[in-house]
Image (cartoon, rainbow, N blue to C red; front, side, top):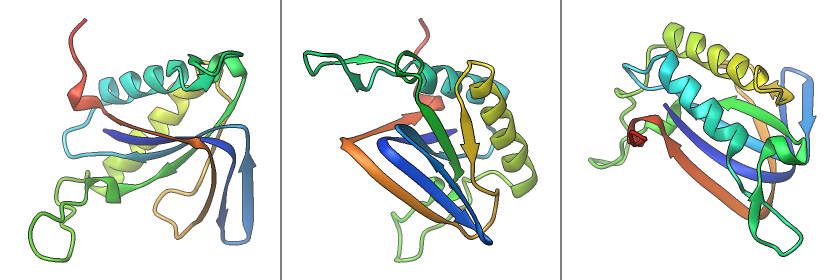
Length: 150
């Protein structure tokens, strides 16, 4: 499972006339890969909620989303599994099938909410207009398959 996390002053998503806004907080573009499990989602939810990417009074990254009581906007993003190493058209074979991806996307958002993070979402597999007013800019790439045993 992959997440591209952006610290934002505000973020939003428009789908079929609905408009959802957050801020300040994190916009999480979440991709589910073939073979991902609930353990991957749990790992990323924990990491997302506790990732220290918000500055303290000295300007150092020292506060998490939980510390600043920020919101999260989670957007499904299968294109994070695009492989453009050959040719000019990305291959998305490494992305999970839609039914499994939707299930794990919902599981991730639930796991993040269980950590007391206010979560808003886009609509899975819908065409969306995503607005991101990046703060910093701060953008972090997480991949659950790159986690190390502690």
